[in-house]
Amino acid sequence: MTSALETFVDALERSPEHQQRVSEATTPEQITALAADLDYSVSARDLRAVSRDLCATWWPWSEKGHAWRRGFFGG
Image 1 (cartoon, rainbow, N blue to C red):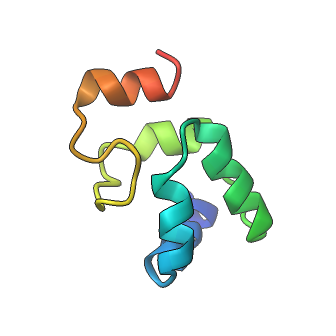
Image 2 (tube, helix red, strand yellow; image 1 turned 120 degrees about the horizontal axis):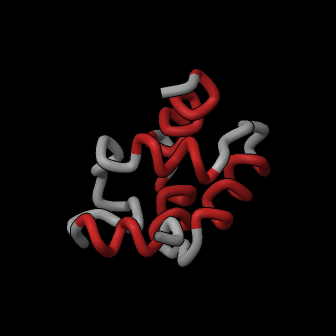
C-alpha cells in the first residue's frame, strides 16, 4: 500500500464523518475526491489494488463479493 493511501486510510479510521462519505460512494472517483479534499493523492487504481484488504464495514464493497467490487471499479 502506498504511503499516501496508508495515511488516507488512517485518517478515515479516525473520522466517522469521512467513513460515512466513503460508505455512500457509488464510484471510486468519489473516494479519490475525498482523499484529494484531505490532501492525499490516491488513485482509483491504488484503491482497486488493495481493495481486498480494505474490509472495514464502511468501504462500499464491504461484504458484497468479488464481482460487485470488480464492477465498482469498472470491471
